[in-house]
Each structure stands twice: as structure tokens, then as C-alpha cells.
Length: 370
Image 1 (cartoon, rainbow, N blue to C red):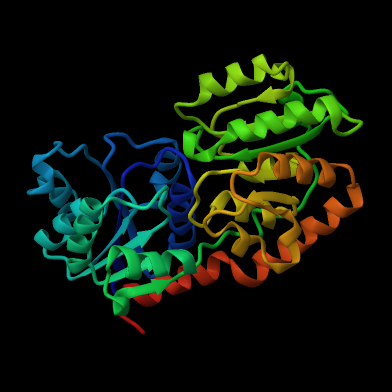
Image 2: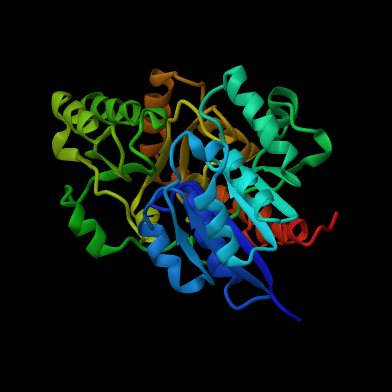
């Protein structure tokens, strides 16, 4: 039987949770009955794209003309045709343009995944999304909150919306010993406790909250030095560096850039912190939980849902920096409690957020199954 040809359309493949999921699907589907291709709309392959290129049937990089491509996305249409797609799978940032291009290319099954929204969209954006949804066979939301948002706020027909939770490879992301080489490369005090995260250095991630908490804890918090490591890139790099210096914590804050060794990075942490102003269903949080790292998260998006009922004490109110600092300090002060929290987080991911379950859910939609 011929393989099913599925083409993913993304805005970019440089780094982030959405990009990690596309890469995980490429690895899982390689050599299977699904032939996977990717179209990137950013004009570049990106670091994640280059890593998975050998696993793909086609990898097309385009940069649609601004404005006119909303009426006739010719470059996207042409790229989709080159992949000979039977199914087009769109992702956040590529919905309307991708859906229009797919339909003009004659593709009959068009899937869209909403990975998360940073804010409530203005009415004009919702109207554009509703138009896109009419060209879309199924709309997948990655959390219960997003299911409700897509149907109740955006106005997508409820019959089209499905929930497929993000998943992670719990064999790759698993508890283990710290990488001595990675720890040495960070050039931190050997007895430091490391608090950190993996994500875009953008305002929505609010890493300034984490840096302020770490700086305060080194003054009045725990007995060992507390260091902060955030892997990622973005427009806030200079501002975050300047903030750390102004708080006297520059020698304890590291921003190493994106890493392809995500599993090693998570295992280097004593505590994973997600202090965003908004989230969808964070892949980096799930990866860290699977790695057995104790979490502290702000109560936004699906964060509380992801950590589960056993870890409700690690969820702090949205925007409450005093509570964030308190829970980080409390968790760092008890090694045994951190170990218990890490085990509970891993059990939660293993039970509810497996990569195999996520891929199986998408395969059912690709094949038109209920």
C-alpha cells in the first residue's frame, strides 16, 4: 500500500514547543506508512528544520509576499503541490494562508492545530480564523481550555474541534544523572542549585520574573547559591542580561541560547520554572516533568492541568511574584521533597501525555477516522 502523504505547514522551525512537536512527529513517523513533508513560511530552514531534514520526504522553504499572499498564496500553493500532499497539517501562525493554499492546491483534507494564544484576539483576527476554519476539515486544540476558546470565542463549528493533548517521548526525556560537561560549560559555582527553563526569550515568557526571584533568593533565601539558566533565543536577551546585572546576579544567570540537547538540559536543572504571562500546553514543561524535574508554574493556560492534582502546591497565582519566589525557595530548601515532586510529575506525563498517544490521535484524523 502506498504511504499516506502528509505535509506540515509551519511559520518557522528554528526553536520552540510547536517546532519540537513537529520534529518529534518526524522522528516517530520516519519509515512508517506516513510520508511526512514540511513547508516553512519564514524563508529559512531553522535549526530544528535542519536537524529533521533527512527524515522528511520534502522540505520546502518559502517566504510569501506580504499582503498579496493573503489573497493568492502562490508560493505556499506551489510548495504544497511539490510535496504531492494528500493531507495538509497546519500549525499556529500558518492557518489562513496555509488553508487557502491547500484548498487551491486541491487538497481535500486540511487539519489545523492551535497550540496556544498569547491573548484574546481582536474581532478582526477572529473573523479571519473563522474564514480559515471553513476551509479546514478538523481543528485540533491541545488543551481543554483551547477547545472551549476555539468553539466559544473564535466561533469554530464545535463538530470540527477535537482535543489532542501534546505528548513527549518519555524514553528520551527521562530522569538521569547531570551532564558533567554541560554543567562545566555553564561556569557556575559547583554547589549551586540550578533553576531554569527552556523557551523563547520574548515578553510573553516573562523570564524577568524568574531572574528577580533568583536574585532575591540569593539575598534572603536558601543557604546554597541559586543560579538561573534559560535556554532559548529572542528579543529579550539584552534586557534580561541587563536586569540580572542590575540586580547583582549577573554571575549566576546564564542564557546559553537554543540547545538540541534538550534532555540533558532538563536533567541539569534542580527546578523547572514556567512563569509566563500566557501559555498553551507547554511542551518544555512536559519534557521537564518527564525528566523527573520538580516544577513551579504560573496558573496560566494549561499549566495546572499539565502538572496534575498531585502538584497543585507548585502552581502559583498568575502574576504573583511574591508567591513565585516563596514556592521556588520552599522547593529548593527540601531535597527529598524535590525528588518526590519529580517522581509525581513523571508519573503524570507517562499516564496522560505520551508521544505515542498524540501521534495515534493525529493518524486517526489524517485517515478520516472518528
